[in-house]
Image (cartoon, rainbow, N blue to C red; front, side, top):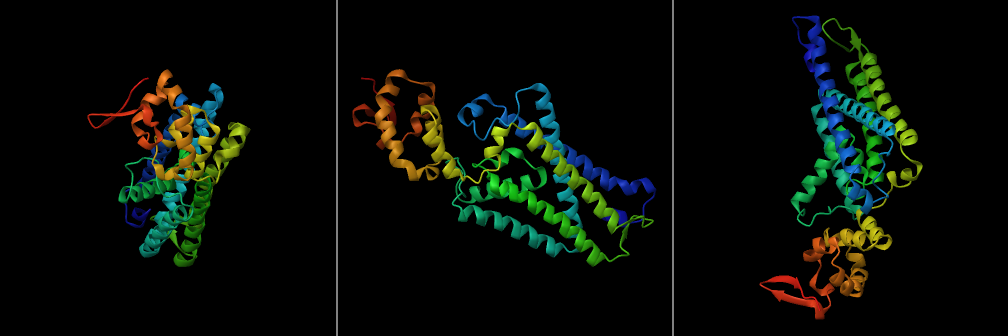
Length: 318
């Protein structure tokens, strides 16, 4: 967009920046849709978490429609957000940087206030947690990743509000372009595009974004999946509900395979459940028990079944 203000050798070169943006946003939308499609189609994830996964339909035709609408909505979001941010940065870089800082800090603040800041991996703490939270926010801003609305990521409410923020950037960019640039502002060597033309272009991509997501949400997705799609459930609430509603395998993966900070409120319940079911697990040796064994706190194990061998926990079948 900025290059359009410079003299060009050929009129066709005026469209090179636009084509560059569109090609980048198409690639971004393809990657975003592929990621969401892949993560939601995993049989194990659908088994362990049927409420928040499984929005991809089983029918082949609906799956194709789902992928196309996800890609179109991601394309509209990425194009609208990229162009609106470029306009704001062009008019005032300081204002743009201020908005970015406020946006990111506001997101982290909401996660802190809701006690939903920490991620599910045990090793993701401190500065790594902040970096990953900022990364997921920026990625979703410009890629519209449907999988990020999961409670263990951004959460449905915050993810939905992020859509409103993206539209706000577009509206702000148009208003700023008119007020700062003035009625006579034009772009291109011949001044063939005014602020109204830019506004119409942004309106088109926002329309693509809204229509595609509307088709995806109301026409493609099964009604039962809409209940939790934009849920305000936090990560802690999610893991607590998984423990209360799931079988032994679901309970184990909702507690032992994530950081204890996400289930410390139900630690007593988890301990009682372990000690009650331990003998049965030891005798039957379910697959998930072998996977989760090293992550189970030692105080959750019955003393009669706990031994220490070479510094590692080992089971003694009796």
